[in-house]
Image 1 (cartoon, rainbow, N blue to C red):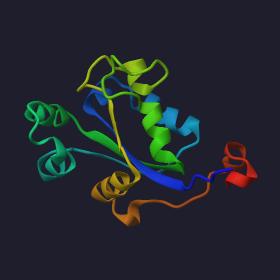
Image 2 (image 1 turned 180 degrees about the horizontal axis):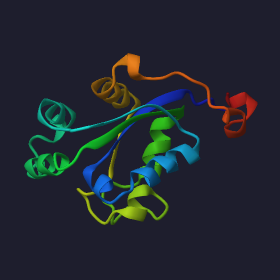
Image 3 (image 1 turned 180 degrees about the vertical axis):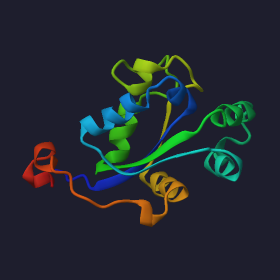
Length: 158
């Protein structure tokens, strides 16, 4: 049996999810899946932080519209932890375009847009590590055991 190591990943609950009252539903899905929230905060994603986080999109024609959209309301950033967390979260989030995302995914169930797609999720373990450091000091990431751990994984997975 191949062991999957415990990973951390970053999610950002975007302004459209905040405005639509979906934060609780979204974060609840991650908790119900068995992912552990190790850090969480509400913030404005603007200025240098926005440009740093979305620098890979700076030459895209939609960049200014994305900036305006992301500055409309605060966002909620969260670091999640679990076995294979990056892939698990990406699977739960679904395709970037909500119209194309599968039923049962967060975007597939609640989004019909490419930009207003509710949530950002790290796309690789390497990017997750960079993004978590961008939003959280190491001292604000909590280490604790979930009491439900024996009910989430078999002994050989723990």
